[in-house]
Amino acid sequence: MSDKHAVLTENEPPPLPGIYPQAIVANGLVYCAGCVPMDAQTGKIVDGDIKMHTHQCIKNISNILEAAGSNITKVVKFNVFLSNMDDFVATNSVYTLYWDNVKPSQT
Image (cartoon, rainbow, N blue to C red; front, side):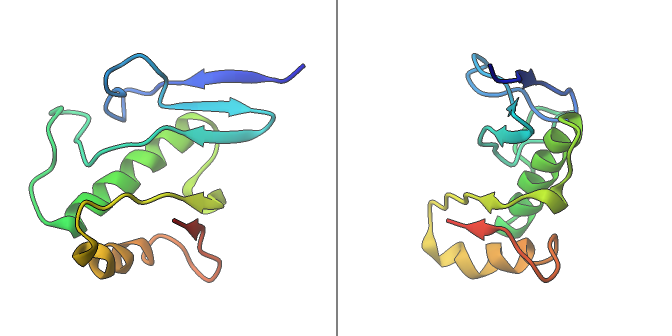
């Protein structure tokens, strides 16, 4: 039997459309749902370019991980979905600020 529980925090915008948790903790692993660059206080997408959006998404994921009892340094896989591949370099330039030598696998 597995240990499995949902994670919800007010420090992260609620999942859209709101029928699933922000993360599931199962057998010591945290599985985060996708997130958008939304500010939890305003409920709005943050202003700015792809770099600002990337910072906000990573901040949101960090908040979820902390609510789950973990943190961003323990991430092993990070999925990034871009609507414009021209944003890849800018997104990666932000991504590299959050992890040192051993960065998570990225798709």
